[in-house]
Length: 584
Image 1 (tube, rainbow, N blue to C red):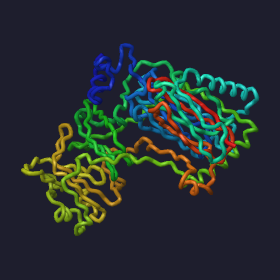
Image 2: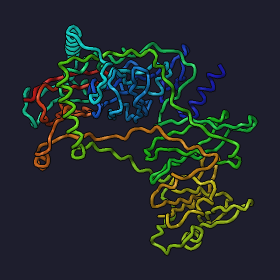
Image 3: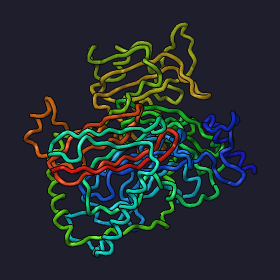
């Protein structure tokens, strides 16, 4: 009972309220049966079940309140993995969720062999139901550039018939009592022609969040019976909780521990400086609990691949720091569907491989756009003084620069004979005796001599804050913030007691390229080949009106194409629709 109380107190302390309330009263994260209520499930819509190396597997993930179909506002991070038949993770991604929805893509490299794979998706909060409580779907990877395709058994006529039947059954189920319709302006189109797709909600209940894929119908593609209609069926029975896994309520949650060889050393209330360095750096200060554990919530975007953590107390050499790795999953019960090849597929594989190579060769003319994250404001505000050193006479050393150029900052030796920076407070100039926070390219320097020894020729600017800054019980008199021209001082920075850890960071968001043959763009693309199998991918299409129109263009490829719409209405009803058309 004591352990249960400690867990609940920990959650309340670090997350204020878990956004879980019932009739205005905060709910315990564990119920009387040892399960977590207000749980989550996820569903993933992919653009294809069969992907060649050199192609992108696009996906949208919906994070849903348990068994309701409504978007969850609890978790802000989701995890997706591509797992092979040996239960090995071959591709691994983390993405941000905004209002319960996230999207990204896996590029399938040529190093991945042909085989049957599983796409696995989950949030940390879901794993409280068991380490096997995740969404999974079958994905087939085909690597035509290797001769070894033995993993795919030969397909026979009976298998093909069963596959077609399975597919047709899936089609009929999708159209029952659905409050959304797909309408095309034509059923047959020419190459490079515009297609008008109308998404109509028969009632206001049809408004919701959807993802739309338009892609060539691939006869080779396995017809796995998966859609948003049956997403609940992929989950096993829930387990009782042994150790509570905290939800990522505000963004990424990094959990770590401060360790000490001497068991008698106090690990409680230790301050740690956390640096995500670079031009747009982040800095956070966290403190440990009585067990030496600390929590870093990262809501902001950042560019660096590493995080640097160091104890700020004078006895820092007594401690070491570790960050907890990802939670291990139980993959032992995964069962893989078997994709099967036949001789008739040879020409299709060869044609698609050639078209992929041509499309990749012209990718720079038709690229997706990575959305740059919001720039981070300095944690100390705008500062009180900024010195761009090229605006002044440059001095050969940092010490001379601070003496001759930078006002209200000086260097003096401490009682151990080590130099330290001091910042004069704003009037009435009452000295606090506190040291400032000193940064170079976002790395917090506890040894100020490292800055003094830096060549002034490398320094672009110096920003000073003369205000007092409070973190918990810690007070710092001002900030000295130095930026170098390359913003890479951290790449060669090291101290004995600092943890430097490569981050598993979320994917950047993208705007996916949409081909157009109208207006000024028509002549630009007239002579470029267009062998797109994927005509359009809209990962997050939010319907706000009863009728929404989408326009896209066909490519130079002829044959049958299919519009696939997946998602959930605002009331939580799953929607899965398909519509075919021809290109001749």
